[in-house]
Length: 461
Image (cartoon, rainbow, N blue to C red; front, side, top):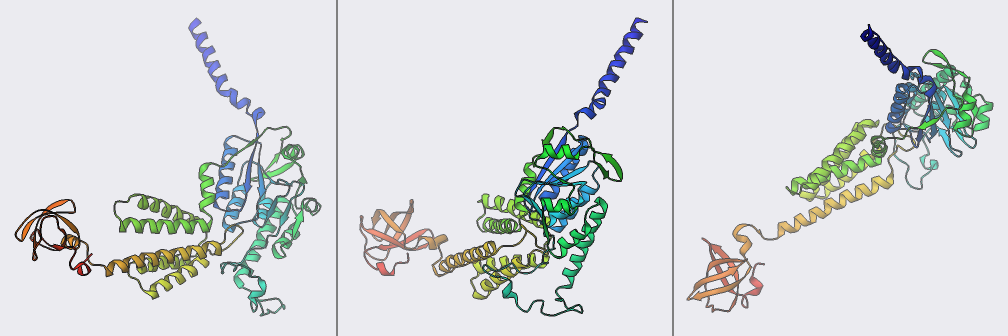
């Protein structure tokens, strides 16, 4: 009987220990915070995805998405919006700190959050889609240099423009209107931000019913958000956020690396370093380091380009240009060199299918990269051309013109020391011990020598 009681008490203790964390979980909930600072891209999408996953696993009360961005890629923006809409944890979009903004893609993301909040001194808007593809702007260029574009008018009297841009704009308007309807925000102003690149300050956004309230910091944000009802994945949730501790989620090393390599300019540089590292390894076997570094850079560059909306025609032109310049280095011609530079420049300018803030090819990278590539090709070609004009320096030919020291001599033959080795030698002219000689030929491991003070100009160095 005593044993049964002890077993029963032990079982009750185990059950209580197991259920204890679950019963106290509600009192230990926190508000998690993640900051998206800079252009919206693959790294931002991955960072938000990990933050939402962490918030769901820890049963966080809310996730505060702090935004300070000029915009970015549409593909990454749509991935982030889809993650927010499917999140089981309420997401509060917070444009901060003072002086920050949520422009372009940031405006769409703020519209998608369950609560939209701005700090004083911030702004949002300018959500017009950027031009698809095209050449990067020349340094010092302006819109006045593009006369003739858009001169044609459509039936309504407006510039005809690109039909694809019209489709993209209409699609963006439909997206921001659908988000406004979902969250009960001003859809008319959202359309104005897309079509006319309109922007609003924090107080103006509050008056236009674009955001829910203005908060100076996260403490005030959680206090003002307390008690509000939001729609989270189809269910109504009343927020209980007052006084919650805030824990900031810092990006890991992979996200930091991803934010660097997904810059298209960095990706192009990585690819160039990778290609030339592998080429150097093939031309100088055994160096190891160039091949290893080149392979790593090439893989990182290709991985970055795979995450970006690239134009494969542009990528093919860039690689073709590099191949032409490599051939130019080994077989110098003017045509291949110029063609390689032209193909590289054209490919770089059309590499991206779309462009956004922080995701555009820069002439400051394209120009020096093309010049450096051409310079390396010309330098290699110069050395190869000089080597072709020199006499062969392999086998017995390498001995011609080398100085030798007479070790012993009798009659017309003896032994000499050449290149640190003892050789049999003969001469067609009188030579005495102590004379300075040079090698003029080799046959059957016997050197032919002559005195260096005669026929020096005819010596083959």
